[in-house]
Amino acid sequence: MDNQLIRQLLDDYFDGKTSLEQEARLKQALQRTDLPEDLLGYRPLFQYLDQPAPAQLGSDFDARVLEQIQPEEAKIRHLPGRTWMLRVAAAVVLALGAFWIYEDYQPMQHEEVAGVDWSKYEVQDPKQAFAITSSALKRTSMELNQGTDVAAQGFERNLREISRFFE
Amino acid sequence: MNLETFKSDILPIKNKLLRVALRITCNPQEAEDVVQETLIKVWEQRKTLSGVRNIEAWCMQLTKNRSIDKRRLRNNQNEGLDNAYGLSSAEHTPDRQAELSDSYRQIQQLMQELPDNQRMAMQLRDIDEFTYQEIADTLEMPLSQVKTNIFRARKSVRNKLMALWTTN
Image (tube, rainbow over all chains, first blue to last red; front, side, top):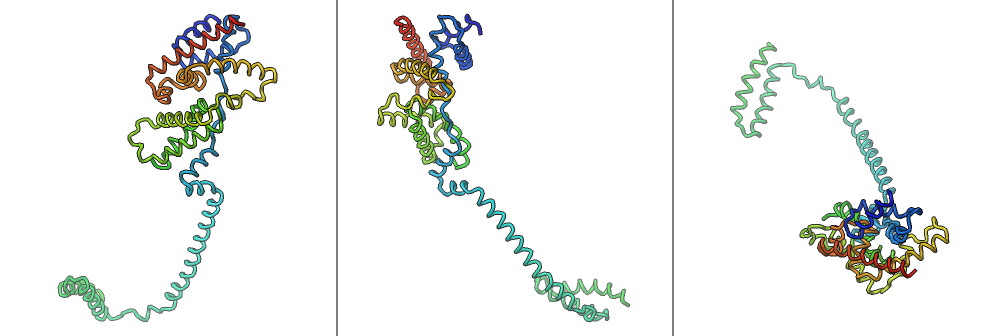
């Protein structure tokens, strides 16, 4: 920035007409050591105004504030490492427990199924099959409250047709 | 306002509040205490903030008022200023630090002689680079008054500088 421009900006600055950007450029320009005499006198002022920013408040400060307003939340946030490990441990325990329950349950099912010879209970006689089925359906109909006669009649019709295949 | 809103909207303005507090207390530790107290008060009053249009501006005002109270209690004009503004930075040689100290003290004296509102407005603008609106919100004055204060402060400093050159 040439000296004439610096002088113009300086006048605008003292008249309150400069933007933040112009003021920043003026601060920078007046740090030069090769300024003419009439501008050198303003250097101390703009050095004073060009102060470094104070130390920033960081995450430690946030933690202190959060601890004041929500002590329980702050404690949880302060133990990220431990909660991570707890979560993993809980997941492992749940998985092991589920696996153990599954293994414990499965053999019983297989044993019950393997131990029964269902062939002994197969109904060979179609008429017997019809009678058993009709009886079961009548009971079902009664419990569904739809009328035994209507349900039985309907199913008897259908079963009569099916039983023709056995004849 | 819930905790998540507080963390996302209020906590991030802490450094802006720190600048305001530092500008008034001139003491880094006190300024930090003021900011902490301000944020805690915001949380305590969160249920009544629905009527506040600009919460950031409200926080600035709260910070300003608390800082003024702290300063009145302590009544300290210059203590801690060097540390606050990095005057003792290791980057400077001892001679440079001495030179800077003299310059700083000279300009600091000129600034201290300004009326409070003019000094605050000029420092918030020229050092902390606040916009005129942010200054208006913080100092609770109209925009036109901010500009007038800054104009008068700068003119006064210029006249005093020229008087110093004449004397020297």
